[in-house]
Length: 546
Image (cartoon, rainbow, N blue to C red; front, side):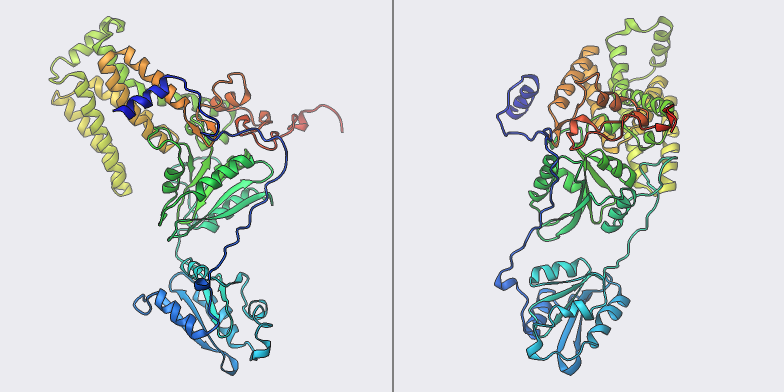
């Protein structure tokens, strides 16, 4: 109880925070580009590859619990003049044809290596005899097993205290398909899949620049799930890049499965209703965010990408806004904002009017509402909660059912349930209309995580409206605004750039500006280069004769 009281007190009363308590994204004064750090991993004696082939073979078998672990393949090879070697890989994660041709066949053709020439040929196994484009050496056994678990093939040769790692990964994966949750008539029709390199390639296909940095990361002490942090080095603020890297390196978990787990580990406010990330499945949206100076995170095995930082306005934007002409895009945004307001406030407003403020209802409408509710046995609040809960159950059931059955269940279930409830005089017809408009408004929300936030807010406003009417709704809006204003997404306030009403960033946050008027990148990102396009981007409009 004290914790809740202190939280409300922090929202209502301003308390200056001590220096260094929070991360703030500051302006970047110089144009010094950030150099990607090369982390060097030191190996211990117990971690090193043995020089003796028998010791390596025994260690690999013991660590992989071979042969009980029956998808581990260990193939022993006798090279020319009797020198022994063996390869190890996981069946189903490699291209076996490539292993046969680029590894085994070439190893069998390596000439005899005498003891005098032992160290001379250690590097030449890769340089001359492994016919594959991606091969390297390592002295660390931990690195060897990490590469094997990620789909590589590792070669051990007797007398060499190194493992030769060959990238022959090829496992089953979903092909590039259309977006499912962010569909758009215009623009590219490609979506991310679960393969890490395919996803980075989709972004690089759009941004053809050597300044696009794909910095590799590994998360999970045991899973060592791989990912990349994307940013454009001559645009993104180094403070932002360093902060994202710091939070990623600070995640201390054994196993990481999905990118949603990463977002929950990186967010500042766990119990906040508003997310601090923009999650997308579209490469074009990621590319546009990178050119604005943001940072994106791609994780192997996840078809979604995290974009950071973001604000509350960007969560209401749809992908199609960037591909529509200005009048159409602005009209859609206005409709979407109205739908969001209806989905949050309409049930609460209905309760407040019918319970406390009947005097603002026109007389004939009041007669109609009273007549419709005359035979309903439940009070308005119970009637509203009953229908709202039924609607949420239908929506959740539709998501869990197979595609065609789920859509049919949503339509038929809603119609039958609503008609039956009205016929049985359990609810009034106007309540069905309120719930239907509310549901349609929630479906019009562009971001799925924001729709969850709005659904929880709707319940809060229903409770406040049933207690205090319009005053309760006003108090709820005030408290939520204070709570929202106190939150930050990687140093950027979630309500940014609301205080700067006349700024171009504020105008772009609410409405869509013509593409030829987007000279500046968002000011709150403090990028190295603020100019996105020249002042006169349509030079053909210039009447000067060339």
